[in-house]
Length: 319
Length: 311
Image (cartoon, rainbow over all chains, first blue to last red; front, top):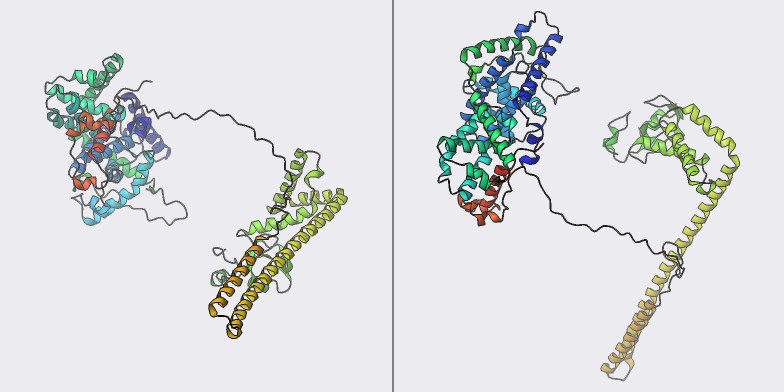
């Protein structure tokens, strides 16, 4: 359950500044590593800034969501939520410049299918990459398998992610049972769902517990429909006496709403420009770091030849 | 033993499970055949470590790990010299110090650490304590003899008992046969009617049976328990000290869920939660699933972590 989960202990942070700090550190770490590797012709302008990284991150996150929504057979919502959370957590401690997002996003989706027991074989998985030839799909499959262990490591082996979908169902059930004031809680479901999907594209999952996100979703959709629900909090959740907790909860809900409002999809021209930069950085540094992402093939094992065809498939091949 | 082969001929061990491995003083193993071949002249060098060895020093390996055998040999030799007993020492601490010394020496010799120094220490000890060593050796042999005598006695008494039992059985068989024979003879010769003869025979057989039973009851009571304590010897038993402890009190588990309390599984239907959950189909209930379980989980998840955590 959430109260003793690794998500609460290790992956819930206090505020956005802490998250920003971590991402900044990841960026710095990569810059230092690249400069130390002593390649000639490196200027600071070649590296991606924080806001450029952010734009690219949001762009690829959107691609991940679209990929999961277009997935055949239909992916359950929790799998999508888990995949996005993995993606977000991975790039909290690593820079986009070090590991290219398009591989990581597919690896995240693949891993989350496994963890959430949505059984998809790797061939079936890459079969969803419609733009690729079968040979290309196989290559992608191999790449995913290479990066899988790295991803699990960077998640610190904390693979269980608590999504807000089940808490939302629970709250709806509770509303129907104990809160007759609200006549038709089912009507709130659709807009609450949309709220949750949007919240998944923000840092809300890293700052608040899933039940808080679900509650905010429901209250938001209720206020949009013009229904008053404050008495639910005071009566049914037993917060009549506890003014402090009540005010704190309203606080967090406000913060969450601001987070959602702040979200915007980056513009296509910017994204293209940043992508060029990213490709250049990867071409320079990535192949030199000798893609040995296979953590399980230690010494004493015959290693496969390095794959020079890493960058062959591009973003457009995804959808 | 089958997972390691002879380091020299390698395959022969698997092909011939009855083949034995021999260990020498350097701790390396060789199978019997290889020993024959390499040490045909009586002495040679070890295959792996090149120490000069003699054929007579090879012993059949008893333990899976050859280093254990090596240590056992070394220990036997050391214990021949260091053979003091516990009552030779004024206090337990001294005895333990002595034992630790012995262990150090065995360890050093087994792992080839500081060998000359250790051997020097051993010789010095031997010189200093020559008479004690001799005395203890004599005591040891005496004890071993006593033990052997006891064993012999036991064996003899077992043999005797076995013989006695056999003889008893023979006697009983013979008695039975005799009574049958007498019956047949009487049937032939006597003038009495057959029924009376049969009745007499039955009485005789019953008497024999009771005799056998009585003899079985007359088992000689032993005077010794199997541990060697005499029967009837008083052993002082002090009353065990009473330990008074705090009784265990069951306290149900309290879990902090940072949220409003969720209703129990049993109360769900009472409060009407189950009306809002999809009912379980017959094929679901077969596996033990009830709609209450899904409802319970959803409610728990909804309430878990709802309140902000107090820092």
